[in-house]
Length: 293
Image (cartoon, rainbow, N blue to C red; front, side, top):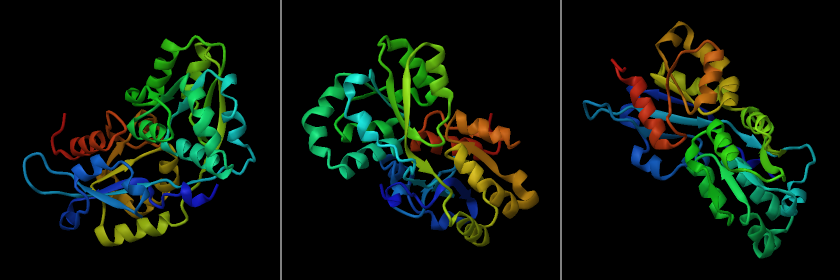
């Protein structure tokens, strides 16, 4: 699987800066209707309106890069045997993209369309988030659980429904969190994980951040999309921000990332209620209010 299929050059953090309002790029409505704009550009921005006025501030969206897993596992071997599993679990769009690419690389698209897809659709296909659900639908599967919002809630949803003795197949990344597997294990729900993509730091993250800080100054807020994005960029952000880091409002895309921020001793000003552009924008607005609750 070629790395470029999963490398999003700017997938590490989201930075907002009031001083750059005049150069704001993408409106909130545009971002809300296009959850994957960052995968098509090195960076994208959205306008976050102040509650009491027309002023906007620029939010630079950056996300952590993904590459192919080099461990030699072949996901198709397991995907070609749906009879051995009770269903599928997808917790990220990248896992779905990896499965799709696996089918294409193995020249198994026809087999998927003619028989495998139907067999998997006779079972449950659990997902986290609307973006993941959308990609699952595009490969012909019927997702459920997308409104759970995070892995913990999805695990609860799965445990309330599963009674099969067959394991659920969980295509995931090499840095997957153990929350969902642990919760399923505790409830006696069998599951098998298979690594289908690898998370690595983008080589240009330091240069990109240096450029942003030199042009825009200290950001008003920084939003992290994942614990790995935090670990890859925090050192650079601390060095560039210096003592002014206390002025920055930190926002997390979800509870797992919020816990990672707290573990680093960073105050979490707000956590998005769900992993969607609209909920994230609302969280950023909340964090930037002068006198928020």
